[in-house]
Image 1 (cartoon, rainbow, N blue to C red):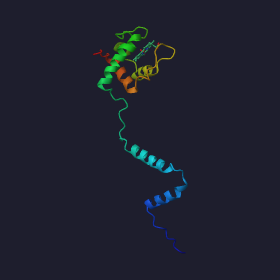
Image 2 (image 1 turned 30 degrees about the vertical axis):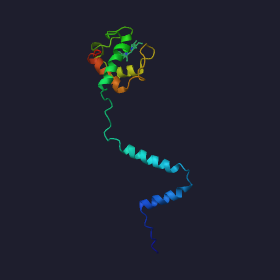
Image 3 (image 1 turned 60 degrees about the vertical axis):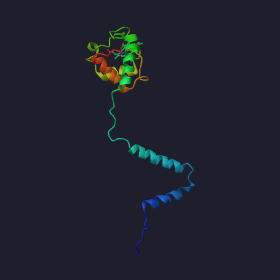
Image 4 (image 1 turned 90 degrees about the vertical axis):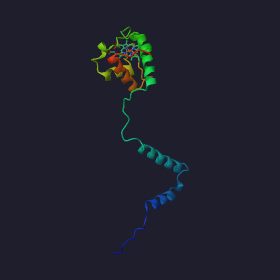
Length: 142
Ligand code: HEC
């Protein structure tokens, strides 16, 4: 039997031949492929360790969150958070409640009650920070 000799083909040559075959492809195919390639690179460049899901908000943002809770939440929960239209948000009333469920209440509100959802204004990390502060005694505005 005659030995079939395979043409020596480097991956680069293969790629080049693919490109020539691809000439009938629409004009955007080239830029598109380049884009996909760059996207892959960008994705590969992501840090291996994902950022902590609940990073502490910056000092400036913490100041804003304190005002938000004292004023907006305070309009229902009382300016000193001792309760009003909504229940008290003090350490003694919240400390034994699971933080996840308090966070869910804040982010999604309680349908059928006056408690509105805050997810358009607060991230999960910020909500988690607020719950932690409420459970240990909420800081005063500066
Ligand atoms: C318009 C009034 C209103 C505003 C504003 C409001 N709440 Fe509420 N909130 C309520 C009411 C009413 C309830 C009780 C719902 C129920 O009956 O289950 C509640 C419940 C809660 C609870 C659950 C308490 C528990 O003991 O389970 C938390 C936590 C809470 N609110 C946090 C907040 C935070 C934080 C904000 C501001 C970002 C806020 N609320 C703003 C009315 C309000």
